[in-house]
Length: 469
Figure (cartoon, rainbow, N blue to C red):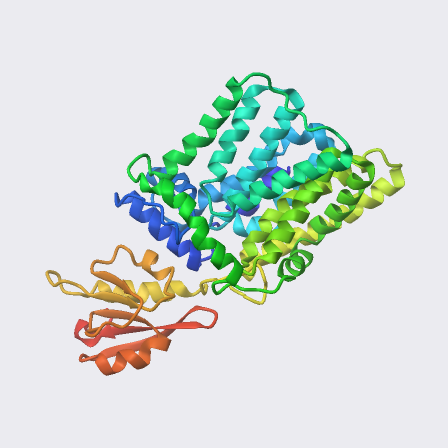
């Protein structure tokens, strides 16, 4: 049931909302790779290679569209529900079921599980790593240990914050063992599994960062990136927010998960439950790490919500043994909390997806951007055959327009106004109009469009193209 709900919420009308700024950049890169331009990891921008190589098979099989671009992330997000199954020994059936519903209906996981961004993949692979590592601890099977190492290798190719995730996981594991007074056990003997695990980690790391050995510098850049991104994380780099940003965000949208996680974490600490304490410390560690960094985007909260949902499972594992009345009260409150989460998920993802008054809505594209794209395409279609077309986008923050218009011949994208800007169609940031207009030597028809809240662009269509047909 939870898996079905997760699939419906993530796949329904997946192309309803236009690509937002970050998705537009990722879509552009993915389209270039599909067209044969190749991929080279950029340590300063665009995060890791995983998302692009993960998307490529879907695009080759199904073509390029907003739906197809978002499809792999949506499926991965929904796949978190069955990934919880290896944790049944630790959380029980009731705990896993509760965690599954919290993740399936989470407004944040639904919203960003419908986006072509990296963060969902980071959360999915983190859960896979924890599930495999826990299964290894429970069974001692070497294959589970190697699978955990493979998941860690994939995790390291998603984005630079994988080191934050692994650091928090390691610290939480050690502190949980100390609190529960259990020794750190390693259920492996001999050296062979460690070699296999090292190879399992290295294989995806080396293959993806080197673009399958076509860019060996990618390995060096995968370490150099930390020098570049550390400063951004501390300074904010245009995304600076106060320390309490994530607590307020979580209380507003993930109310049920927060309430259950706090209670479950308290029970785990009180009873010295090893796995429950680990999940509670993992959630607290992620919250502390991302709250300390000034650089904050709302999708970073996924790294907190995941362990919080697992900590919430501790509450329901314990409640399974409660008397009937308090168990029924908890079930009613939980159902109400899930209903609230489902409503917030629908509100953010289907109804108000371009309303920045909702904190989960970030850098959205206006829902009517299709009219802008249609006008530009219609005007470009009137360019006489045999003449080299000139369609220019002028402005630093024009995404996702370059992707939507990528098939137009003669498309150019410049951050600044060139000395000779005249062309057939000009799409310019309204803030740059003062620089553009004195340089124009030809006559244009002008029309304004809202690209995103607070950002207007102007379309100039050259009058030599004639009137629209």
